Amino acid sequence: MQQALDELVKLLDLEAIEVNIFRGRSPDESRQRVFGGQVAGQALVAAARTVDEPGRFVHSLHAYFLRPGDPTVPILYEVDRLRDGRSFSTRRVVAIQHGKAIFNLQASFHDDEPGPDHQLPMPTDVPEPESLPDFKTRMEPHREKLGDWYERPRPIDVRYIGSDPFSRQGNPATSQLVWLRAAGRLPDDPVLHACVVTYASDMTLLDTTVMPFGLSWESPGMQMASLDHAMWFHRPFRADEWLLYDQAALSTASARGLAGGAIFTADGRLAVSVVQEGLTRVGR
Image 1 (cartoon, rainbow, N blue to C red):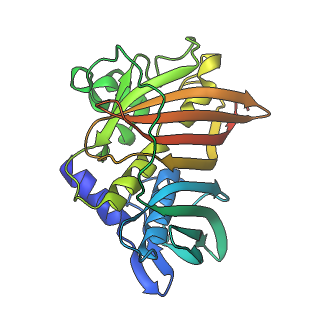
Image 2 (cartoon, rainbow, N blue to C red):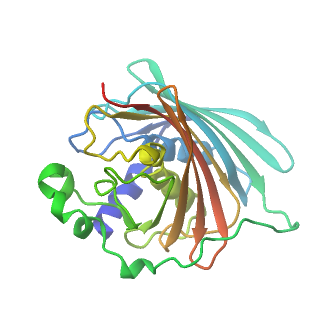
């Protein structure tokens, strides 16, 4: 698993090819399109590479997925340095393939400042992550349905609490909880930890929007794709330590689903808030 995580770190280590221009690659996997969390994570890396003020850390990002990414060719990331102020920096990043924008992101960076502290509470009575089966153990009954994807090394260790994407069929719910962490040890760079959590935040959230209808990965004719993604980074965290991802279906209508998530550290601090809207076509 450490090897899979090391490959993710390499994936996020973009090549600088010109001032404000970076090149990223996709893993050598049989995907029809680039995973959205990968593009978001790489775009955040590109933005952060252009922020020169020490200690200025990302506090929010807002992104749109414009076109499916082609996993067989590199992705170019062009960064626009919109503003550098005394306390904040703002960047816009456009990801390009085949001469067209496939994704854009705006991110804001802020100096660490003292202030009052308040947060929503972490859910209680949650089982310890180590007491839950990992992905391969949980999905063993469905390995034939998953095919090669079942055996694929996973850089993010996800532990489902309650239902999983197969057992939800016919069991409506409006929320889900998962524990997640990087499957190994990461360097201490806080930017890398933010980018890894950005990558991981796209893995389960959109599934939440079809849970009220008792739909699962086995539901026929279901088409889902990320449309936009927003994150706010509140407090320090490590992506290689357990994080609780509390996710809720907010609205599903007009073939679009909106879900919100709160990511807590194991000791109860609200680290990140996430909102995502995606395409949710069913039965076509």
